[in-house]
Length: 275
Image: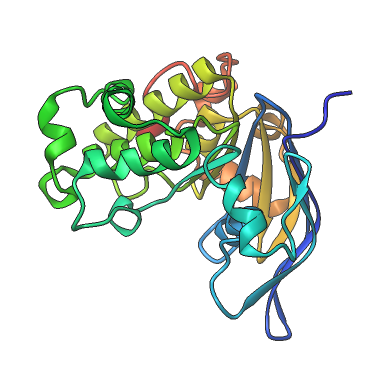
């Protein structure tokens, strides 16, 4: 049996004595796609941050998180650092918080390539150009640009290029399109879908939007107030949600009819899920 790329058991995140996330279990197989969905404050982003040991100061995790077989809960930074990039890449909601405003885009992509893949000189330049071309930013001006000179959608494409630069086996996408307008949102989702498929990566996709999660994933974990209230096949959950909160999410999904038509891959066949 193939070992899970990501295996989470009993994950709890606390701030002092208060449990913000309680007893989460989930697995992402190599090439598998799993969604975390819930409203703001449900604990979905904290869960994704705990996976790579990126919890804010003052929060502590317990339970078990194994990333490519390596336990990350309680691990020190020297053990976690090699996992970020080659094993797991992360795309955040607002790219401006992840990009250095004083560094040109090309250099920001070059950093993880040099650090994790060991490329230098012309090989490094070629890798940066290829990374930008892969996210459809293939004009030379993009490598020379600073983040503030790009549109929101272009910045998010750069963030995706950086997250994928070290050829990770797992992509964690935390609300990657929430800050974008609906047209750009659909383009970015199409881009992520294509890159995950082409590279055969695992995907942990975090969103408050069931339509988007349905478009991008095969299985879904529904979080409410830090607790997993339901999980399973996304299409089955859309057809027959069991928990009242899941039924509420389904009722508010903007493209539920398209999902229930049985389109392969949930809502993956068109841009309806992002409108």
